[in-house]
Image 1: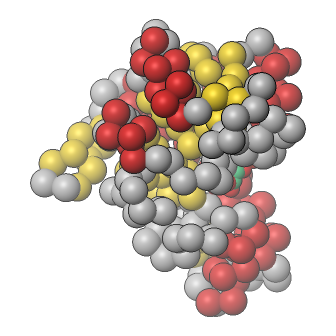
Image 2: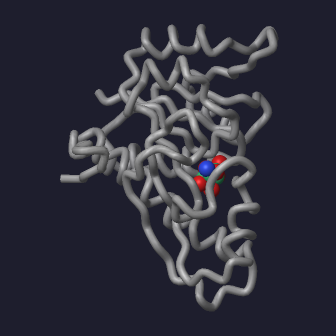
Length: 204
Ligand code: GRF
């Protein structure tokens, strides 16, 4: 079975979208573990309800938290195939990136390489998109490297935003697409359909 580690920080709607595609049989994978930097969030509540193992990662020593080094050991022991950042707000340390080269993906709620980078998360992204007056937006799934929102782009989806009246409206439209795009990209990893040739990503 293809094993996922899903990293989250908040609401967890993408985690739910992945879980529901697994339940309805369209995604042949297992959420082996959920990782968060916050214990008190909806996504961790969901993991607990579903009986999914979960870890809180923190640089400070707390009774319930693990360090990134311990987490790497845990992920290795559990033979994780793919790490999925689904709304994870902390920077991934380079020791983890090195261990999982081309095996960590992130979903970003705008069409990269525009509207990415430090501080570009949540509604900030959609505000910037709205203020720029661009006519299309949509999620990007990309590989994670040491720089925020910088790794090779795997897949994107686009939506017409030419008549939206607020950043919140863009957020809703993009989130709908996220819930389809992320499970579909994961499924392509499961089917080994993602190839990197000359620094470009191809999907068979
Ligand atoms: C999503 O918009 C995702 O693109 C971004 O963070 C948000 C997470 O939302 N990286 P949720 O926690 O999955 O509901």
